[in-house]
Image (cartoon, rainbow, N blue to C red; front, side):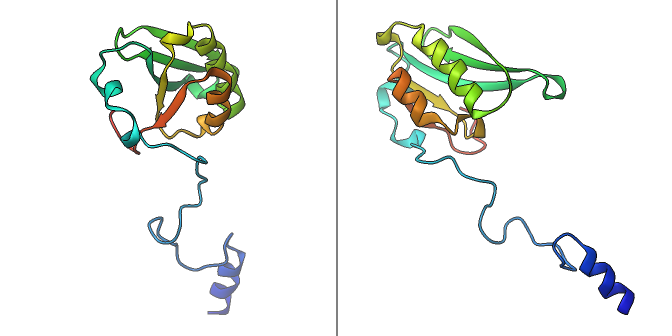
Length: 141
């Protein structure tokens, strides 16, 4: 019995049982000041006017390469932004460069999933004048 207590004390958290992920608060970090896709204007959903973009992030084999993908929702134009790594700083630089290369009337809004690489979305909005919206977790949009 004494040996069991000594082994438990050596565990990383010092607990003999595991804590469920559903119990307690989420400790993975949150993206500050996210604007939900549910408050997005209805004309974006209609896909009648160009200038509304959907963004995503693709990581290569072994996370050795990263590419940002921008898709215009009306015309389905695809733009790729090469990124150095999967950090928020690289995403900010890559997406800013691509969005600023587009004429201003054609960059109205930007919808993204809740990936941590877009944690600096407020800076992206300030440098590109594009309103950013975030999808719900596990949303197919």
